Image (cartoon, rainbow, N blue to C red; front, side):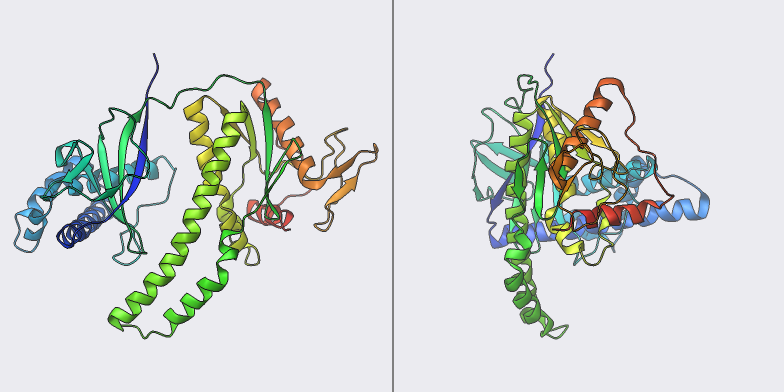
Length: 399
C-alpha cells in the first residue's frame, strides 16, 4: 500500500488593510496564549513537580477567555489559539525525548509571526482561500499549481521580518513517489571553498549569497544604527530595509539548495555525508559567517526528507572519521595534513585532491555501514573534546 506524502505549498499573498489587522491581532493572541501556557507548565513543574499536558492548557484557555483581562482572545478565531497549544505540546515532547532544547517564550519583535488554521477554520473553494473571521478570500499569487484535486488539511499564515505575507497549504501530493532504484552512490564532502565536493570528482561552487550582498547589507545596517531607539516609523523603516536584504539572501540560498538536493537525490540511490555539528562550528569566530552562509544543516535537512520521499538512503559518517588524511587507494593514514595542503601524494604513489579524496573515503565508509553495519569511528591518536575537533573540521574546510 502506497502512503501519500503530505507536502506544504507556500505562496505569497497581499492582504487588505482589514485582513492585515485581523491577522496581526491573531498573531498577538497566539503569542500571548503560547507564552501563558508555557509559563503555567513551567511553574507547575517548578513548584509542584507536576506535568501539565495539552488538555489541561486547553481548559486553561477556556477559563482565560472568560476573564475581563483576557476577553480580547474571543475576538480572533479559536483554532489558531488551540494550534499554539498543540505546538507547545510538540515542543515539550521533543524536549523530553532529548531532541531539542527547553521551549522558549515567544518575543514580540524576534519570534516568527504565524498562525495555524485547521479545516474547520477556513474555506477553500474554486482556488480561493477564506479564513475564519474574514469576509473576503486572500489575494494569493499562485506561483505554482497545487496537485490536482488537492484539499488543504492545514493552512499556516505568516509574516516575515521584511513585512511579506505568506500562506502555506498542507496537502497530499500523489506525485511524490519512490523513484526507480539505481545502483549509483555518491560521497559528499561539504566545504567553504567549494560548497560540495563529490566522490565522482565534481566540485560544486559556493555561491556565497551573503558575501554577494555584504556591501548592501552593511549600508542598511549602518543606516539602522544611526536611528535612535524609539524613533518610531523611521527606525521601523530602516529595520525593514535590513530585513529585506536578509530575505533576498535567504531566498536565493534556499532556491539553490532545493535545486541541488533534488538533483543529487534523483541521480543517486545512496548518499553519504559527514555528521557535522554545525552549532559547535559556529563558535569559531573567523569562519562562523562563512559557515552560516554555506547552510550545511539546511542542506542535510533537505537531503534527508527528499531521500525519504523518493526512496533513497542517506548515511551520515561519524565526524571523527579522518576522511582528509586517509588515502582512498591504499588506506594509509597520514600523521599530519596542514590546512595549506590541497593536494598530496601518498607513499603508494597516488596523488590526491584533498576534498575529492575525502569524499571518496566518506563513500567507502558509508557503504561499509550500509552493507554490514560496521562502525566508522577511527582510533584517535590523542584524547580531544568534541568541540575542539569540530573547530578543526571547520578549519579543514577553509578555502
